[in-house]
Image 1 (tube, one colour):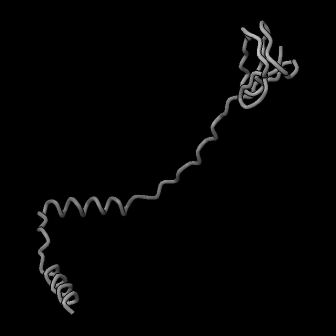
Image 2 (cartoon, rainbow, N blue to C red; image 1 turned 180 degrees about the vertical axis):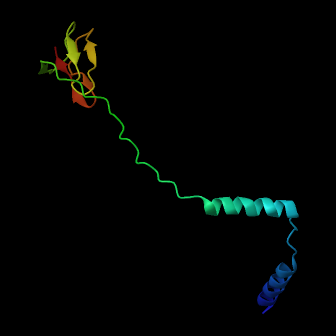
Length: 103
């Protein structure tokens, strides 16, 4: 019961602790502030406007590439990026996780 007795003693000493006194001017200021908060009307919040997203690029005519060839221009149908190939390649050029189209 030693633990229980010490806990009860701590509870008793906590009750005896004095709260700091608040100056009368500070108490009046707090009361005025609380009165203002209670008197306020709830504010209606407007719904957020939808965010405009970037328009998707219009697809240009062309065919999907099998492998990149030097001097050809390639186009991404997702973001509209155009790439000029400077060397030959065995694999296609990929942009936005899709194979690019030949212009």
